[in-house]
Length: 233
Image 1 (cartoon, one colour):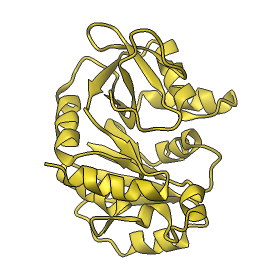
Image 2 (tube, rainbow, N blue to C red; image 1 turned 45 degrees about the vertical axis):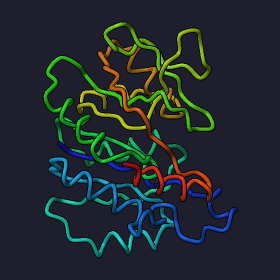
Image 3 (cartoon, rainbow, N blue to C red; image 1 turned 60 degrees about the vertical axis):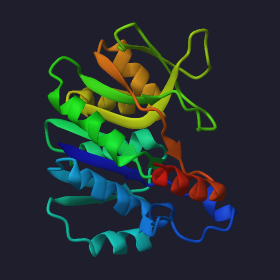
Image 4 (spheres, helix red, strand yellow; image 1 turned 180 degrees about the vertical axis):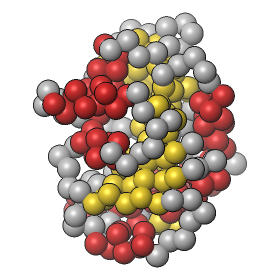
């Protein structure tokens, strides 16, 4: 399994609230968020880890250059207008096959993530497996509509009758999705959620995998919340 991390955001809200470290280096339980993700991925059968950071994150680039991993670490340095564009840059270095993509501030329990990865590794039916959650933490959640078999039928910006899940910001798929991603870029499409809609429109068979709780670190207060969450028994 290959892994990719989007860590190219500016982290402006954290900075405005007095958090001086770049978001990827904000510590949870004494470990920078980006290192926590890398460690979890390494323990979950990583064949490689690819990370994108923006051109202003010299501190993050320096930190990543000090890491010694048992698998290849690819660092892409590019300032992009959206997470979808960051994903497009990562797609150029990701090997063929299955991979899992997440943003650096997506916080989950390692045991939940490991079961999710195992399910996708064993899956031979679907084009991708999206982590979804009934726990709404995001300020602008992306609602995920599913059929009775948990096949994803739509991504919606607003809640709807029968809505049960929102996107957890963790996406497992294969390199086949890159064709749709390329078309989105060529057509001037923006935002990851519109790429996800494009996958559904293209007929991709996407399975939803429910994880009871996934949180994001967008504000200073979220740091303590995330630490309590990952330490819950």
